[in-house]
Image 1 (cartoon, each protein chain N blue to C red):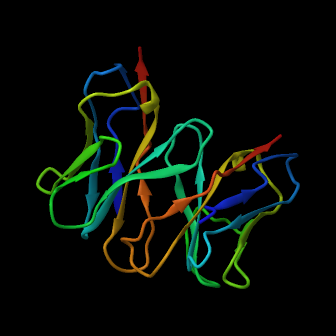
Image 2 (cartoon, helix red, strand yellow):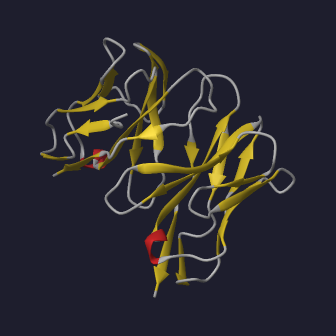
Amino acid sequence: DTGVSQNPRHKITKRGQNVTFRCDPISEHNRLYWYRQTLGQGPEFLTYFQNEAQLEKSRLLSDRFSAERPKGSFSTLEIQRTEQGDSAMYLCASSLGDSTSETQYFGPGTRLLVL
Amino acid sequence: AQSVTQLDSQVPVFEEAPVELRCNYSSSVSVYLFWYVQYPNQGLQLLLKYLSGSTLVESINGFEAEFNKSQTSFHLRKPSVHISDTAEYFCAAIPTSGYSTLTFGKGTMLLVSP
């Protein structure tokens, strides 16, 4: 396993711009998760996919946020019209199988700074 | 819904001293419990997890955690810490069934000094 990878690792953008992050899960992992982590907080769930189906979305995921996993492999998270409050670390995780007991493996994260 | 509370935001200890990082959870359904560790500038890594069976679970690097259902706790312990254990530790819970995801605590920063 090469692990979960995320790109870019860092992103600085101006308020109002759109940004897109990519996550490549561990090969053959059918579940993929997005979390957001702000300073002094634990990761907070945003959304998750089983294969290409988006099964759950948090209330944290406003209309400006959209996530896709078109072929059940990599995923993208887009934030439109960024706001300063969107500044955070965005984490991606993947897991194998359908049980909640399966370990979620996390990527290194994408740190977003909105100026 | 479930919630996870980590009672200490920072725990400073000296090398070779014992340490306990506290975690309490609240849930209306059965949950699995996890401890993740985040070293500086790295992603979260699973340290250990409790699914069922023995209430004491161990990691490969000397940490252990005990599930206590009556006290709804899952405290993490190590009898003798190393400098390299300096990291942030997150406790997390997930329901045992249904569509759901991990709920994390706010984390505890373990600072090990020589």
